[in-house]
Length: 260
Image (cartoon, rainbow, N blue to C red; front, top):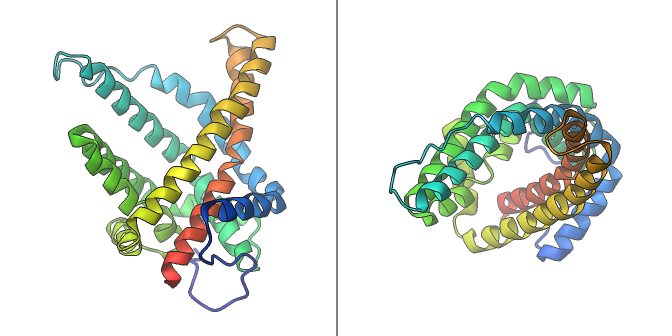
């Protein structure tokens, strides 16, 4: 299993200090240049994610029922359900996520990893990736349930755990520590960039791709029918390809923090 090293190499896309919109524009540009390789990895795996996770979410009970006997029970149940669904999706899509990070990180250095090899690396690295993902979402979830703000703070400080593990070979705890060290002293900057890219991806996935997916799906069947869910899953899986933009954006920020 190959792990990225700190050896000097020519980088095609240098993560210099840049504003959010400048970095976002370059991320989209670089994403389009590597669209075929990213799509080859992401689409097959996330077809499974988009088709299975909606079914699984229906079986998650209202875990917060009776906690406060107020409207907060429903809110907390929805939050917990969203966290569980995100965790399930992260586990199933872990191989694609790892492989995509490796492909993009290598191409940024002027190297090339075949998608098949990247998928093999993703399979080998998946167990510890899953363990780290569970710890991350558990910590964030506990923080959100308690007072909301602690969950946000934890989420931002540990936001680079994926890159720390996949590219730097850090274990679960050391990946969190490495991420925290990078964010320390740059919390506001990282927070604003994370919020910014989250808004962009949310709008893209829910109001652009999601709208197209639902309109096309309505042409082939009614809500909750197999044809409807299948078409909707296909379009949403194709939409996941654009997660490559988020990866490029966050990877650039990650490398920039390392250099500083």
